[in-house]
Amino acid sequence: MQMTPDLAKQDCSACPIRHRAVCARCEPDELTRLEEIKFYRTYEAGQPVAWAGDKMDFVASVVSGAATLTQTMEDGRRQMVGLLLPSDFVGRPGRSGASYDVVAVTDLVMCCFRKVPFEQMMATTPHVAERLLEMTLDELDAAREWMLVLGRKTAREKIASLLSIFARRDVLVGAAHTRSVEFDLPLTREAMADYLGLTLETVSRQMSALKRDGVITLKGKRGVLVPDLDLLMEEAGDDSDGGMLS
Image 1 (cartoon, rainbow, N blue to C red):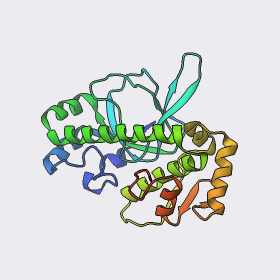
Image 2: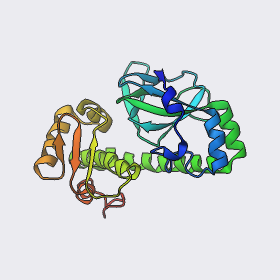
Image 3: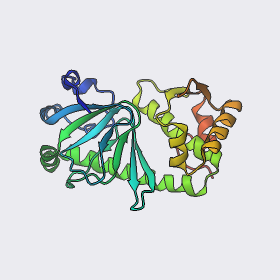
Image 4: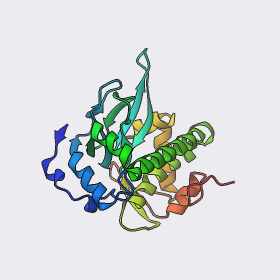
């Protein structure tokens, strides 16, 4: 992990996640207060942000890159239970320790806020508290939808669902809204298999099938082009708004 002095000078108004992160509803004076308690940290792929039980003296928003949330059982078995993508919030106000292992899976940049001043700001700034509540409820909805993905969808639909999450996040964070989306997979095929409860062979076979059917185009080891996002959503069993097709 490295502190990033150059990023510390970045104006919040120029931040790529400004309108989706926890600060999305902040007024200029509130952004100024956040500026006073923020700092940036960068992690290389594979580096831990925190281990479960570690004390965390900061909370953060993911600016770029991705990280995994993993839980380890007493006998050593591990399960990936979540992904952190740009604009996602890391850490729990009011709780001193990390609940899960948080590990960067790509080069990761986080905008961090010292925890105690952030908690104080939550108590006095409704815009921050309201946005964090909204993000928490969105995360709860996503977790419920993911239960459906894991429990009821076919292998092909699972792969398409995961790809659609990455694609839609890229559209929302990016400047332009387009039905054609290109992005880099933040997960290896092995990690995708772990997250989806599939074998590596199944993931590879279904990725190849989606490519053969023109739903995606693969570029190099990690690059994915989605020519038509609506088509990918249909393959996932969802409509273009992300709801399940009846």
